[in-house]
Image (cartoon, rainbow, N blue to C red; front, side, top):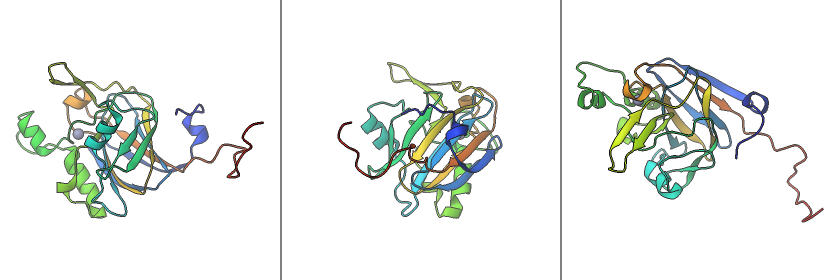
Length: 224
Ligand SMILES: [Zn+2]
């Protein structure tokens, strides 16, 4: 469900991180809190992964999520599930409507195999591994990421096309945490995903929204 007030008037910001191009961060988001991923300049992808804070063997699952949503294009109202089929996130608001959950985070090998790059190239995988290490997350357990703002088309033949993101300056995605989570987020390092240039990403955590005015925990009359 989309909320009608602009975010600034209905959200209480607890933290903010400005990710420089080709970097990442790791953070904890508690149940009920809102994670807002913002593309401040447009056409920039942000790879996101999460693990249950109480047991990092539970992780955000592309397969489970796509299976239950019955679509590869996830947006407002969809639930993002863990490998144990428990809700990890709910998509609360989405100003873009196109994200990818098929492809893995770009890695050093991505640039060797697909781009033919020689020498070191920054990557989301390395940035996630580095920023999740303090939480005890090892590189081998990082699965397919939710690639926020990534624009992937699947042709009838099954061929995949990576197109420029549809996000414009200021566009954002808001996820509500359904459990306490360890989260890794990047400003993606891959040329192809970001229409050829690298830009920053802003990451905000907001407090759980207050209940609407007048609402109480008491049961309301069935009709008035
Ligand atoms: Zn990337």
